[in-house]
Length: 199
Image 1 (cartoon, helix red, strand yellow):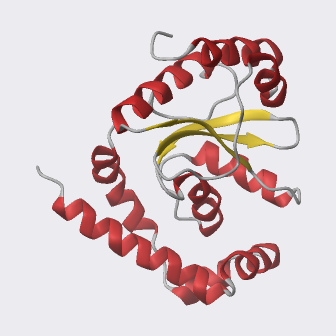
Image 2 (spheres, rainbow, N blue to C red):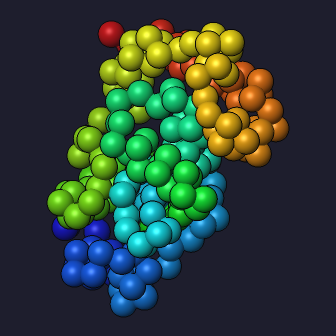
């Protein structure tokens, strides 16, 4: 765990022993922040029903809060296990606990921390598919085809969702139309992003 601080290593060891993120945080002295920072950060998605970590990620801005939106909309491509976990939490009436584990000035430092956390916690309930080795560009290229194949028209999509999902869409996005528009516009942005990635 050479890319982690002593406190971060202690957090991993405590979490492996207890399976409880709050207890690991308290015993290691690591503060898990809910506030999104302005620079690069490593974050954890936690199931509030048992305080277990089910996903480790790296990002900027609102990346940490995007998983629930994409899982709900049905356009999160690739990681079905993570999506099912998120939907199970939402359907139980709870919300995914999203916390910042560490912040960094450089993206490569955030990648290094993310990678070490995934390796350390991989066998303890994580739904991560990769080991934190792919860059954002590589992930965009790898997932674009699957993403576009799942895009449905508003009418097809709205007919397929449950009353609970409609209610959540209205709560999160204001309306089901806004939810679909959010997904469609983001897919369009990803499509343009992927086209700009060097071969």
